[in-house]
Length: 133
Image (cartoon, rainbow, N blue to C red; front, side, top):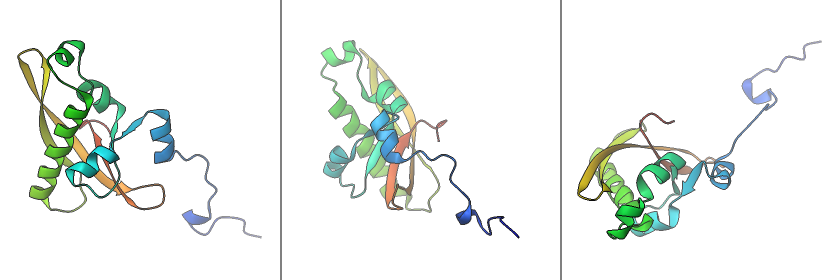
């Protein structure tokens, strides 16, 4: 009697972590509604690291008019432009965004965007730091 699975599809799932769980847990931050305004037609999220390090302004920069909405718009718009220029396969896309990190100090940051399958196999975009996956 052979009880071995005939393919990986027949093997039991030991653990799975869905995109929905990552959004609920705060590992990912949903940017989909703001992304729609930029022209995206699929769900878009960023990692918590991108959200906290770049999209959330410091108290100093908030006093200068910086906001999550404005900084997220910069991230999304620069991604939109990079995608329009890139138009290649499904490898990760690196692109740059300039952030005001301190008064009178701008920083050019490289971000990575990946398009992959969502929980139901639908296309989704995830924005992350280059060292994240």
